[in-house]
Image 1 (cartoon, rainbow, N blue to C red):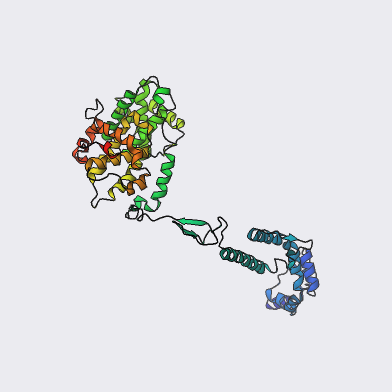
Image 2: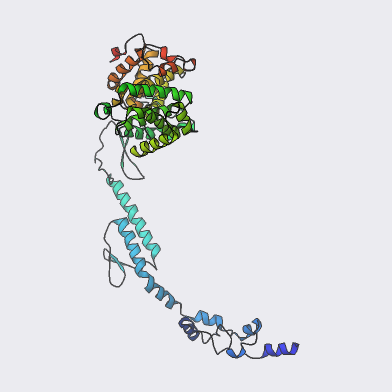
Length: 464
């Protein structure tokens, strides 16, 4: 057995007769390397196993030399001919975008620019990139030396201006450095808060957006006269007064109450409704608002129960779909409460110790406007600023209730708030209030410092 294996191992194999499929690349390779062995053995020895040792001995020693003898330039030339067209187009686009100058390409595929002939980008791509970078740097240096920027031409001679002018290095645009808040006598209320929930870095941008959107989401101030014929202003006031009691019963946050009234008025501004469905509309709007504002919203059955089961669950769900589709699901509304939070911070900035009475009194005056139909003509930011103005005057008549800090953050001057403040003071002095006393009773509680009982001894009209 051993001799048989040795005989098989020493038996010469006819490796020069390829039986496998020869491709063009392999035929070319065999011709250039003086006949390397094929990948597979001869057909005569297919039935016998050829060991690795025999294959190693059969391989010629000059294989490495033959590989090195292959002409390397041939493959590079093929790759160059295939890829240079797309590569040149790519770099032409890069150079055109960077320089803004036309670059023409001749028939031979070379780049021509200002009489210079550039080599193919496949061979010298790094040089093309260096040219692009150098051109951009030269343009920036040229613009800096001339004292100009792409956006605005600066004067050649320096002039004295009130605001400091500077050119931003990152975008090359003209920037006007605004006068600091301290120079204007304004206290920066965002720099004091370290609570991440106050969103101090973004507060200014957030309220800029709210100031813009409050006009779009504002209900019509005269829908009672133009559209509604079956309900009156008094019915609306009674409904909202009852919703105040519901929010207290279910311990809802104030934002839910404000959003409820906004959804109610916006729906009534576009859709006619019978007085038999007015309470259904009120509880449905509060259901939608609680889903949006509350952490744990109340169930539909609870709102049906609060109406003494006057309406069924199916009716509330149907009305909910009707309201949402009419309002196009636009529930993010800048209400008076959202502006009031910001303005209270600005009002407290001038106090050494924050005044709790000021916060409660401002909230009380703002909620009084929910019941009054006449306040729909005012923007929520104006109502919130007027509540702060009257609250500060009610608590302290020795000082001007308006200051540069409040004017900066509310974006309203004291003269612009005159009509709203005077109308709000009439609500404050109206102790009778008829049947609508839910808000007054709410803020008469000790937890709110009984702010509904406070009155200013002097009229606020003297300030205007």
